[in-house]
Amino acid sequence: MNMFTSILTAIAIIAGIAVFAGYMLGYTSRRLPGDANEIIEKVDALLPQTQCAQCGFPGCRPYAEAIVSGAAAINLCPPGGDDTVQRLADLLGVDAKPLAESHVTPGVARITEAECIGCTHCKDACPVDAIIGAHQFMHTVIETECTGCELCIAPCPVDCIQLVPAT
Image 1 (cartoon, rainbow, N blue to C red):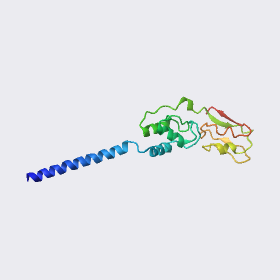
Image 2 (image 1 turned 90 degrees about the horizontal axis):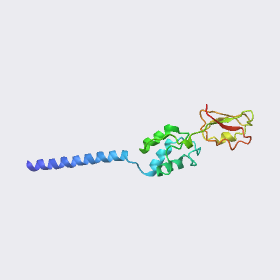
Image 3 (image 1 turned 135 degrees about the horizontal axis):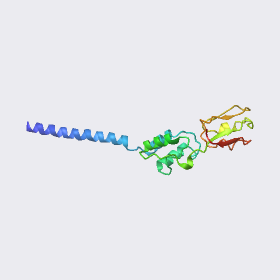
Image 4 (image 1 turned 30 degrees about the vertical axis):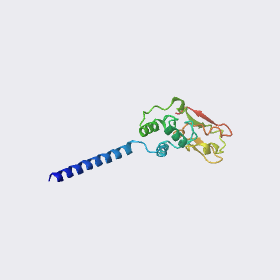
């Protein structure tokens, strides 16, 4: 009987160690970051995908790569705003910071409609589809959708687009 009790005690100890180790492995796999590509994908998914380059990178994926590598701060995305900064901070386990002062959108695009020739160059350049209008007809900007990226200004052949303070 004494040998039987020793065997049961040993089995119980080994089972307890196995359960504890399994719990710890499961816990750490949820808490510790995975490989860099997985984290880049998660960061990229949180970004607004406007490809506006206001963060200083040519698109959202390169910005996500820079965030994960530590080459860029998480607060450089004006279209994403403070909500995106907070979500990135939560994902990466860092403190959220307000949107960088140098990356605050100065305003929105406004088309002087009387000068617009309806060429659609601005509409094609807009990464967030904030410009509406048909070919050969006047275009206008949906101010609530405009991120102020200024990508529509350069293609305009008649210079009828200006950046103005948001209303």
